[in-house]
Image 1 (cartoon, rainbow, N blue to C red):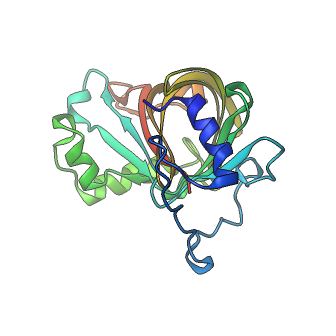
Image 2 (cartoon, rainbow, N blue to C red):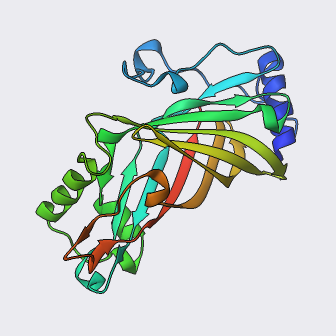
Length: 245
């Protein structure tokens, strides 16, 4: 099993001798995309997620927006919850980088998600999410849910166009890393510990995991109607799969 310590050793060797597999059989490193095919960094990207200059003894790896995905599962709640719907909210427009240093506590990442890229109830993702998401939704219902989510009352897309997630390593066990997260929504930062699985392929690092978070911890008021008898559960479930370039 690939450990995070081996991953650090690998990345330091990468800068000197190129990519080698864990079986020590050298392989040709992947070619960098042509300049015209490189993803273009959004002009409005928050400074936290702009790739800085690497310091001595560390390596910076940019997230691959074409191969990364974040999914948020929101569940109905309240006495009349049966009349509502569960939702899958997703985005593959994820920008930022991973910082690999000499120790887990010196390493971390920064990730920015443009709020206007959030997709509500993609049919394929709903189908894959299981029976709790198998009831059909009309286009009007989906559009209304997204409009409410981006409104000033919730995410306030116009005033706060990005969600910002930063993390630093706390400890490691094999390929599992404990992380201290700082999640900024609408200018308010919430801190929470979580964990992630890290693996390596020929294209870079893969980070995956799942966490739960309450909307009220982020300073958000969960949607409710009919005097609170129909609402969205406070706790959200977040799943992610991130790749670096």
